[in-house]
Length: 354
Figure 1 (cartoon, rainbow, N blue to C red):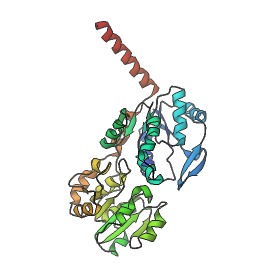
Figure 2 (cartoon, rainbow, N blue to C red; figure 1 turned 30 degrees about the vertical axis):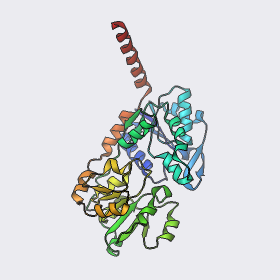
Figure 3 (cartoon, rainbow, N blue to C red; figure 1 turned 90 degrees about the horizontal axis):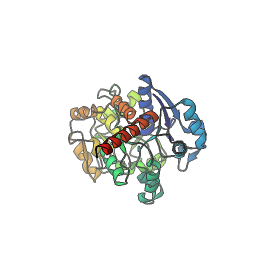
Figure 4 (tube, rainbow, N blue to C red; figure 1 turned 120 degrees about the vertical axis):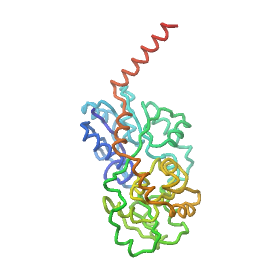
């Protein structure tokens, strides 16, 4: 199958959306599928206000559509709700091309954290963007229910995976862990306001706090929390070592739809402490993590959990399964025509019997 994937989030960004797309694309290509990635680096773009790593592309719907047509796409998927995908959506609607979308981020809550406005202000845009798609791909049951509550019921399950060959309990521990006090409490991810890292760094727990990652909130957090250890971006086996050597992993975000870092930590045998929100409530079990509105309580409970149970839970998530779910959720022009033809035949049969 030839798949045109349009996304406003792409390299060099480092986040869960990009990692998910990159991994799934690689697996699908390995299986013989052709993927065209239409991303901001192909067009004139400007940095997003307060988030310069994100580029906002400016182009016309017909320009994006021309690329899709020249590629000969069998299916079109719009991964994000940004300006590039808006133009792709416009072209698909004008030309009656079926397309699917995905809800990777709780966009209204994300924008609310950055603008200090109510999330309700942004929901009309979300409903407009996803309306008209053949399916909205979602990673958890919580998000499925949330979208249904917003009258977006055409959802398809698309979970996430973890690289078990890399994220494992015996990954080499970083040298810094031998120099700081335990218990070691770890955060991994974007260092940005919407990740709610302040709640973690302000928690009243003994031991050491380690932050792995980079982002626009880094300088401010460093100045306010000089006792914490900020080690920058890590990847591969080095990142796995930070997970495996920690005593507890903290997931303070309230705006994620899943949280890849949660299952990476679990695969490394590290229990997770989080708020009881979308993502953690869909992933964590009583033996692999602890959730509480009081993060201190969650951390204390998580520290008492067994690493073996965490590893077992981490193994429940497979990238191969994720890639298959994504592929099954796509809707090609041919599949759409067959679907509507089947419905017409069924309707005629019912009418004839009546």
